[in-house]
Image (tube, rainbow, N blue to C red; front, side):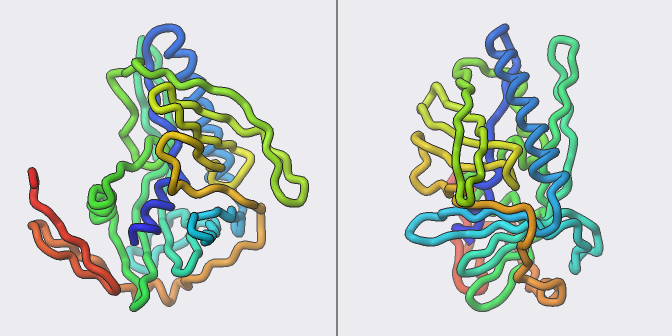
Length: 263
């Protein structure tokens, strides 16, 4: 589950956005435009079967496949769904949610991806994770959903102590595919994230900073990807019910220690 959670966050993480001062506001506008372009082209208008293949480290690869808008076998609600395929498979079901931030008399609308459900395939079975439990897993993993993935994590009031540097890099992929990637460089830890609305899911790679375990895009395509977890199989997934107190959270194949507040 930790591998799946980390990959999911890495796949969809881009940047926080700040608004203040002339130079900061200029960069913020660029990041605002980039985020909305990526959400629009790399998620909203993807064709069913679009895919990205990633180097997940340790000689392993993970394939992300956009499976289109589907009806959840657990809730009956319709969401977009991406399936991650490695040794095991997992699905994230999400909806596009607008987030408005008002600054200096201007309203900036960010489109974000709001995760609603997750199906995680374990060695001994398939687990269903509701929206309520998703946030807990992120806390247990020591990570936050990014601005692009979680509604409402946009920085406000603004913080312009570390304004990122934005540049363009030309990247080549198998089959002669050429991509102009936007590179966002942190002035705090000098880490760089490469992203582009020209590839499914927008994410390409992270370099420097804390990128030792971050996945890297190897190849991508606009069609041909197939789901591994069928709707019938998902309907039989075991719901995850998390205790609201410290203790051991038992899941098929592994356990997680839950600590109380302040521990």
